[in-house]
Length: 107
Image 1 (tube, rainbow, N blue to C red):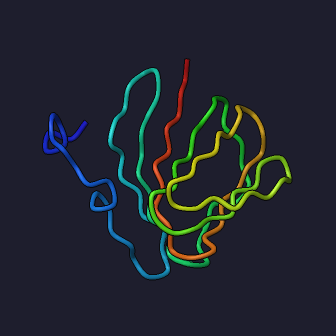
Image 2 (cartoon, rainbow, N blue to C red; image 1 turned 180 degrees about the horizontal axis):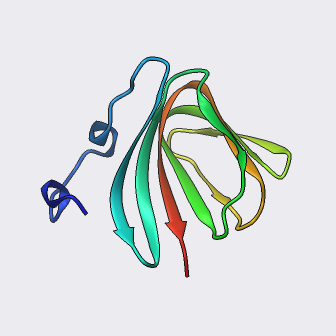
């Protein structure tokens, strides 16, 4: 965990900035049991379909995203979350610029 984030009150949206035409990420916590990463997606950007061997939770903190899990489309907005089950194919698309926190649990 970055030292500047420890034991501090932080405004989540301010931990990462948008970049035109890009997906930006910043790892907040890395442990053997899982990770917490914050992402910023420009409109039209996304992550192609893939799988992960462990459960993950997406919390949208700004904007709106389409999150597809096993072919089912979900529109997720600021203040909402969705759980992506282990080994289920999933993809993300930025309907508009959005920021999210991805929590991956390995155990």
